[in-house]
Image 1: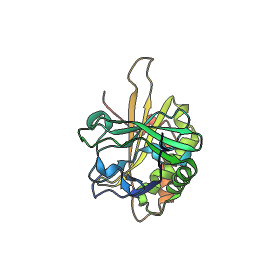
Image 2 (image 1 turned 90 degrees about the horizontal axis):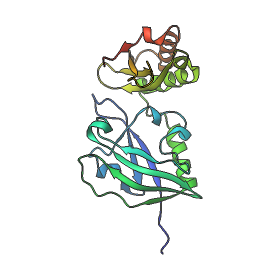
Image 3 (image 1 turned 120 degrees about the vertical axis):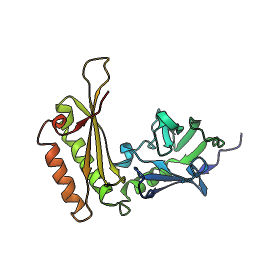
Image 4 (image 1 turned 180 degrees about the vertical axis):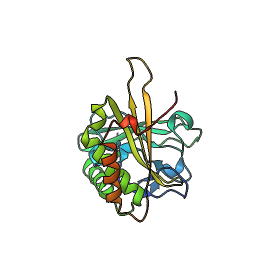
Length: 228
């Protein structure tokens, strides 16, 4: 059996059009723009799990990683579907296999992809450390999310912080979402923050101000609860 070709992973941050809600990620395999074959903008929407150090990104492989989302429309997988792939570490290689497309876009699924694990890990680390593209709402979301996660504050109130992400819908700002289990088997109560971000105040100062307000009291008292 011929040896599988070794691919090269390339990631890029892509600012969305005005009014779009979330940041995109472009994913290229050698010179093939993988996501653009499924989504005209060539973007994979960015959720909270794409923030922070590379080892926490969904593309980071383990020996039993399983299916992860590598592309989705400007909606959500439960509504409009998504592009999934199984990502696993196998020795000195990273393998993308078992592709699954649940969207209405009928592009041909890629073949299995093999990567050199060292190159793959280096590209993930480079992309995670690449911050100059950030606009104020991105910086505030990153810093605020890190502070809230590290604080353990939500767990102390029986809550789970789901995500902290930038929003480019006017007025631009940061969205935070968390849940609280009511009783075993019940749907959790869902809460959200909408925090306006300005371009005039340093992003670091805004993140500190938001964090201080959230960490000062029961988070359920300052957030908006979603109706069931």
